[in-house]
Length: 399
Image (cartoon, rainbow, N blue to C red):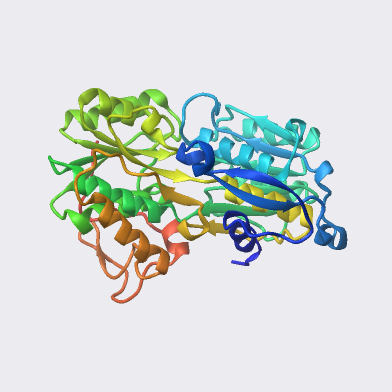
């Protein structure tokens, strides 16, 4: 991976001062649900950088950003909500006006025609960079990028790119999943932990997250089992609700999720058990149940991507950030977490960020008895994002 996005994101997140700056804005850590100064960082941003003048970038007043959303970000606090908060953060960070952002909402990722129509509308409305935020948009985005080489396309959570005007962005969410697994393992009493999953084992994005979660649990509680109920949809509120109810009926006393709604959290609260949220801080929906949430700070990427187009430094490279880039993390633990939970999380986080712990380290046994990996090595990012089609040995799929 080339380093331009990493450098830009690091500059933004670390609050370093860029040269040629003329105004200060606030970067909000929207996903963490913090308020006031505790959730913001001061940063200076170029109004018109020298690199933009020298290398053919697009001036800020000519930038127009399109974003394709799976659902309505105003409804809920899940995947789409968090991506749109990232777009809002980017808009604030770069000082873009509302009419420089074009949103297309409720675009089903399983409908290629609807996806194409939404992207075409963004192009027709003058967008020069378009973010397509869901896995199923990938192939249509790739096709449109070839048809419109003068438009920049950036696709989230997949793997396709062309190294020119079409890149891919995702992150090492497995790092945060591992930490949340420690939380789950320390707080279960039944040793039955549920997981509502959007997709089955053929999808590495979801399966890698489940395995990282299970590995985190195993590191503190090897007797606990993970029970996975798959909805086969990125966004299906009723299916997500039914999946959570099934797991709760089985006696799971901690419910985690890779789905869009907060049903697993609110239903856990209704049953008097615990939950672990995803995408944004779901303690606001389930304050008495949510132990923590696995979160994304998408504004880190969206800001760096659009800034690179303004500067003329976009190079088509893919982006894959993690905890060190402040793209992923977990929220502060609930004050009702079991004693010792925070210490175990703190220790593991330090090891991950230093590189001492890679999560998928050494030889890993699957739930079919196969062995994955090699002693003394860790799985690389390409394998984790594209070739994890197996479950860790403590994982059980509920039909």
